[in-house]
Image 1 (cartoon, rainbow, N blue to C red):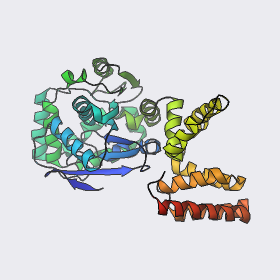
Image 2: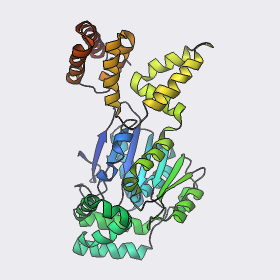
Image 3: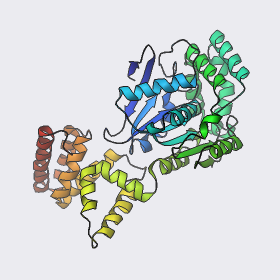
Image 4: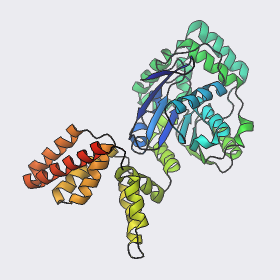
Length: 387
């Protein structure tokens, strides 16, 4: 995982997903690594360029000496976004990550397109509780926290059915740097973002678990009511790590919020796969006769089929290229090839797909496809910024 030094503060992060897609920032919970989002990555990276950021001392990240504050953690995130050249982003935060999201959306509203607060609240336990935890962790490390944390993170039934999950998360918590964990506890002790919620203008989803002992449904509901226009989704069953325990339902709710309905989703996917310039030209050129067809294209193949989570976007692209070769649709084939190559499809993978189609669709079809691929590569080489 790359690490960048931001004014003496080391930050570990990971980027995944199409390079030209909108940026989605994921910040996790206290005591876990960014792998806490692994169950979300296949679905989210089909839509977004996903930036996962580690808390100090978590997931192998460096840990500056504390204490920390939410403002400091949020400020470091803003500096990271600046360093990466990111402007306006979507943001999803889990627990402590949600607090950072509240700060970011209230202090820098121009930076946040859509916000998801997952199992989070503007204030958690009393300050004394966090300060005691910080002191003991500095003295003993994080191993003493494992049993109590697992009991809050997952329902007993889920832990019983998934011993591998218990082992994974207990191991991750045990490896968290004691200074990083303790200093994050001090940030939570000082945090009270209730007054800031009224200033959040970003479309916000509050996501919770029905059995979450850390952020029970009534606290999630109060958080939602304090944010203008926010919506609430509580998943049952589910404890504090509802994104792990109820991954499919969580992903569906999160994507619905971040990407909108079929029309909005379809437009975003269509632009990501074919290029914004091509799609804008097609829509602008629609007539009274063809406009309903353009609307159908956006809603059905792009907003429904291409948006399904069962296959990642790269796989769908390769299937589409193979089928267009077999059917001899050269115009559409060149469009899909060119945009896929611009978004990172390697020539070696494209070559294997075309060789495979030569076996099952015939040599003449593959021969034409190789010529189209050469033309697309030449165009990209000549003008890499031309959409």
